[in-house]
Every structure is written in C-alpha cells, then in structure tokens.
Figure 1 (tube, rainbow, N blue to C red):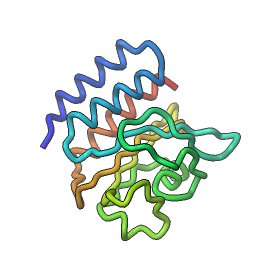
Figure 2: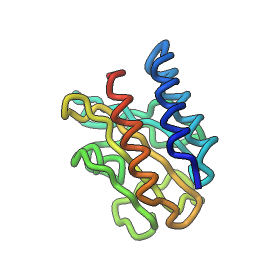
Figure 3: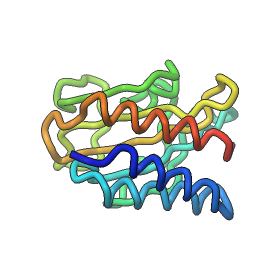
Length: 151
C-alpha cells in the first residue's frame, strides 16, 4: 500500500517549485517509482500532433526502445487516441501490446489533458501481476490533472 495523500502533497510541492517541464516530469517519475513498490518503470510520453504520435519524455527505470509510438498503437497509443486512462492487469492479454521488457506484467497509462486536448501521458509498468487498484487510478489522474499547467 502507499500513502496517496503524501504523494499528492509531494506532487504539488514539485510542481510549485518547478524550474522547467522536463525537470518536473523527471522528479515526478522518480518520486512515484520510489514511493510505490509496484511501479517499476515510470515515465511520460509527449504528444506531437504533426507526427501523430508520442515521443518518449523523462522517465525513471530501464531504458526502452519505444522512443516513438504512433497514435493508436499499443496501450500508450490507445490512450492518446481515446484520451481515457487504461489499466492492463495482464499485458499478455492485450493483442496490440508493445513490450518494453519481458519482466513487465501489468501497465497503467493516464492522459494529461490541457483544456480537453491530449498533450501527454503518464505510463507506468509493473513487474507485479495485477497490482493496480482504484487508488492508483485516482492518484495518477490527480497528478496528470495538476501537471496540465506545464503544457
């Protein structure tokens, strides 16, 4: 279990003391990975409308080959397309899944919306089977809503 309220407080502190967007996103990534035991890879993908896809932004965890994801492809691409959070408790059950590591068992992706427009997303991979609850979704939606001021 994790302390949702403490993480919210830390998030607000990081955003309020922000010097630039990438540093803030990296600090949020590090904080989430350190505070939540089942978050093994935490990062952001930034939307590029001209290329109709997502570019890898700041992250914490193992390196990934997925530096660009077209809209609609994989879990991240589907979140970009539909602007809705997506929780995948078993990545093996997803036909369109883009694997970053053989260790990833589950994933949660939450969009960052600015005035209703998709601008980025928070992507979290877990090596644990089915670890995500409504606490995760609520926390990550709060964080993404607060981060929208940076875009």
